[in-house]
Structure formats: structure tokens, C-alpha cells
Length: 295
Image (cartoon, rainbow, N blue to C red; front, side, top):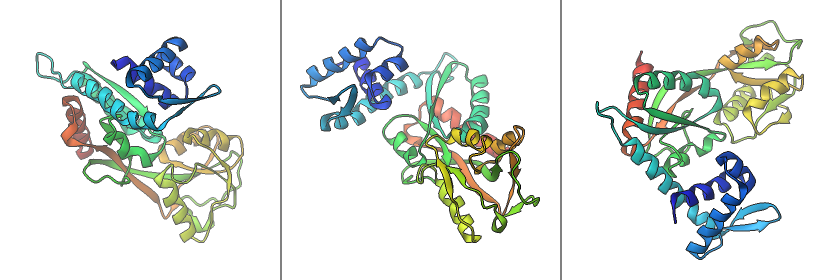
């Protein structure tokens, strides 16, 4: 077995098939197929059920996912444990972030970090489901996760709170909405919502609870898997949605009708990590983030 086999195996798992994995890895499809077949021969087990063009993990395949991730994570950690001649971190740092946090604060923190530690490369993964935040760290996908707080099952992990995000109502261009700004939740316009699946974002549940407490209800018009898709649907007139303030202000510049809310709907955000498992680069990033939060 070699690292490439584990890398290709996990790429097939994460991208739901050999073709997509090959595209992501920028290699030929037969290269991935041969790596998977070679790994299966060496282990003496079938890792995938071949169903048409699809690949579904067998029970043995499921059992290998965690160890394979830890092997690759250990390699990355070994690279990140190196220091240059001046004692400064080098290597790679893996971070997963909610899309709403990628622009700010993550991009801002990464920019400051790279200016100070240019020999560390950073990979930013897309955190689609906040319920997966802690498992990404425990399973070795990354060192740090940027997400809303508090997280699910964060026992044994550390948290660095960075700030609070406020949510605003965003309506299609030309919508007839009360002039109040902030808009009382009790006067929320009776317009269908563009939302994401329940459970994919902890903030969705809090927004619905706040609306229910004001005697109103959310009536979905469209449920989209990808959070970034909400705004295009709103701009197309499909319905309204709730977005983080920075995204709502950007939506207003594109013609959307935007209102802040009373009472305010807010959620803390920050970084989740395992301090005992951080590489020198990871420790340096957390230190920079804590200094930024205090500033």
C-alpha cells in the first residue's frame, strides 16, 4: 500500500465516483481505477460495490475511511511540524469553513497569516453541514474548522470565539415590504422562503424559533442544498431568505430589498480545534486569530 492509493480511495469516497475523483485529482480515470483495484488486492477485500457507473462503499470500505484519513492527516501533520531555519512554521495547514465565514473572518485571517508565515500553504475546505464540524477534526480531515458556535458534540475540543454574525431579511427586488428598519419580526411579510435543509445549519433552527416566538411562520418555496444558491433564487423572485449581514448588504447592492430585524437574530462564530493535535502552523494560526479577536 502507498499514500497515493489512500489518496485516490478517499477521493472516490468524497466525490462519489471515479470520474469525479479523477477530475479533482487531475489524473486519468484508469489511474484511479487501477489504484483502487490494487488496494483491494493488497487488502484482500472489496472496498466498493460497482453499481452501474456508481461506487458504493462496502462494510470493509467504510471501515477503511477513518484509518485512511488519519494516515494522510499524519503526513500533512508531519509536513506542518517542520520549522525553517528561523524557527518559523512551514508546510501545510488544512482548514474547513462555512461559506458565510470564508470571506470574513477567514480570508482576512489567512491574509494576515500568510504575510507573516509565507512558507505555510493553506487549504480551505467547504463546510456544508455544521453538524459535521467536530467530526472533521476528529477524523483528521483538517486541524481547524471555522463555524457557528456552539458546535455539536465539541467535548474535548477547543474553541476560539471570533465574533457575532447578525442575520437580516432579504426579499426579491421590488418587493412590497414594511418601511420599518429594523423590521419587527411580528410584521414579517407573508412571503415564501428560500431555505436550506433543516439540520444543515444550526442558525436555521434559531431563525425559525425566533420567527415562531413572534407569532409568524416560515413557509418554504424552495429548499436548496447549497447555501450560496439562496441569493440567486431571491434575486429571481422565487422568495425571501435570511442572510448574514455582510451578504445581505451585498444583496442590496444588486437590487434586493433588505431589512434588519427586531429583535436581532445573532449567532456567535469562531474556530474549533484540538489544541493537543495542532501543528506549529496551526498553533500560529490560532494565536493570530486570538490576537485579532482581542483587537
